Image (tube, rainbow, N blue to C red; front, side, top):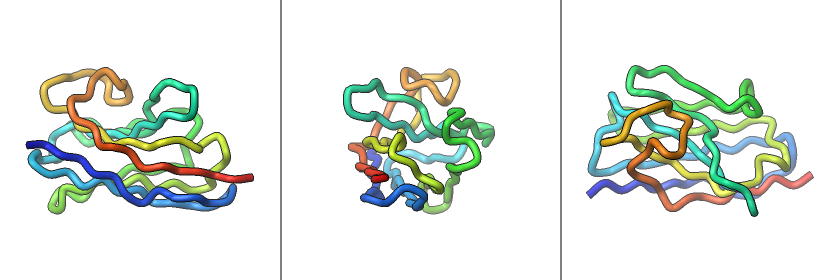
Length: 124
C-alpha cells in the first residue's frame, strides 16, 4: 500500500521560510516522478515543484528562485524548501508520486498517489 504523509506546514510572516517533508512508504521514489502541489481557497490545485524520473526539476514561475525541491532516496523523503514566502503562497500543500501514469511532472493529472496535505499560511 502506497502512502504519502506531508509535514512541516505552519504559519509564518511574509519573508519567512518553511521546509515541507513528504515521507513515502510502499513505493520507491528513486526513478519516479515526484512533485509538490498546492491549492489555495477557491482555487484549483496547481503544480509548484517537481522532479521527474531522470532527476530534472521544474518549478512554476512564481516560485522560481525561492522554492527548492530535493529528495532523500535512501529514506524515501521528499522535501520542499520555501524561502521568501509571501501571502500568495498561502495554500494547502500536497506531495504526489507518479507510478502508472506519465507526462510532464508539474501536471496534476499525471499523478497516481497523493498525500493528505499540510497547510501553509503566510501573513503580511
